[in-house]
Amino acid sequence: VDIARLGQAVPELLGVRAGAELTGGRLEIAQLTVRGGAQPVVNAALVLKDVAAHRGDQPVQLDALTLNLDSALEPGAGLQVRQLELQSGFARVSASGLASDLRARFQTDLGELQRELNQIFDLGAFELAGTLHGQVALKRADAERVDVTLQANAEQFRYAEGGRTLELPRAGLVHTGQLMLAGEALTRVVAQQTDVDLNGEFVASASGWYDVQQRGLQVALEISRGDLALLGGRAKQLGIGDLARYSGALQAQVSAERAAGDRKSTRLNSSHRIR
Image 1 (cartoon, rainbow, N blue to C red):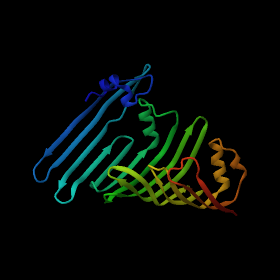
Image 2 (image 1 turned 90 degrees about the horizontal axis):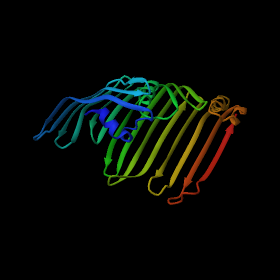
Image 3 (image 1 turned 90 degrees about the vertical axis):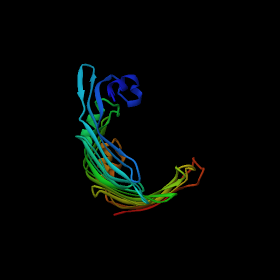
Image 4 (image 1 turned 180 degrees about the vertical axis):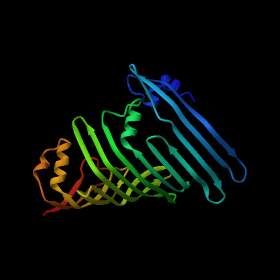
């Protein structure tokens, strides 16, 4: 596939940024094996390379992106992904397992990811830096439920846009929950427990659900640690100066509830203690 011709023909399809023109790029099938019969097998190796563009008089070239897939249809079990690996100079994703019980790991350099893609594709004016890595598991419990677990960690995270900056030496997220389905349609997102740790300055856990179709929700949030002085300083970096005058350690419980079909009002309850 000639990516340059595709981008020139329909730039909106690829999200090519204004002022940039794709001048090169090929999607090559380095390996493709398809075997039928009682145990069908699909093995493939795809390479996206030589992606180049011009922004004005400035030439731009992206790192190669490779995709390797080794899969088979196992009798009585369904699709088995023996190996799925996506790799580039700025990110790596690997996955394996049954289609109904899939596990994946990911790692990326956020700065390189943003810089690489933003050369050609319009991702906005923000800046990112730091690393992100973690793992996710999706397991089909039955026809109406998919169990989800997610663990993600960021180091030396930095976000900047329009003079506002957020910097965190480390941040972590651990989530367990479910996706509820009706046929193939997503009906409800459930968080059994979601734990967030922002550099030890803000530690909280949440649970609840959100009805995708009726817009109802129920959320319970417990803040076990909130260093107001440090949080105020970081809020000031984002242009929110009012919090900078507070200090102490915050502990709080917050709940929110909105009835199905009610898109205008959300009931909030909270209690807190500052030491």
